[in-house]
Length: 258
Image (tube, rainbow, N blue to C red):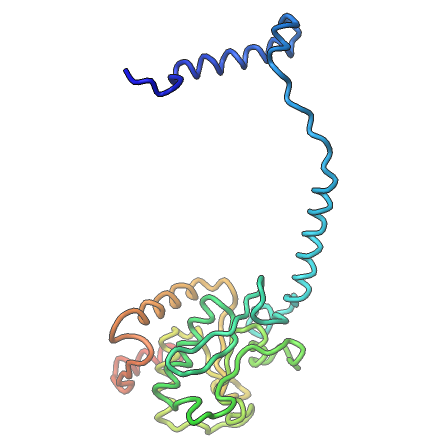
């Protein structure tokens, strides 16, 4: 028999004895000497300093929220936020793989969908940022710059939209892309199952704009985002693999999500 300390049975007995002694002492049935053998738990003094610390933490949290959040939605229902690249916020500047570009967007599924659109546009429609091209891509903008929260471009302030070449495809103007380029754009949008909308399809055209067309909590968001992430990890799939967008199956898929 090895000696590994108090056995389980002895532990249970000892615990039961202490519990019984505490119970008898509290009922006044244990002799004073026996009651004294079981020391009472020390009283816990008030902790005003802890309360002050909690109040300060709450104050800092409220101040942080005022600095980040607006409480106002953009046109697609996502909340506009005031700052980018800060702790506690949802807006972050991301690199767009394969393009040399960076853009501020909402993290999570919106980021995945929008960057996929930008990458395929770069590879298959028209390369962005060549020869130091300025303003090839823009994303999040401060809510204070939004003139009308009902317009699709207000989605930029919620990090759920990007603009390709903001100076080249002004709002209200059509005809910036050839028929062949539009065919590719339709195929790109089909990758997102219609979760991303092209501004060229809006009543007031904005052909440089691509924005989320669903509200927060849409069940398909994470599913489609997960599929696009998986494509990026698999050879022969995802952005960078130029497909034949004229294939009948791809044309039918693009028409379905248009």
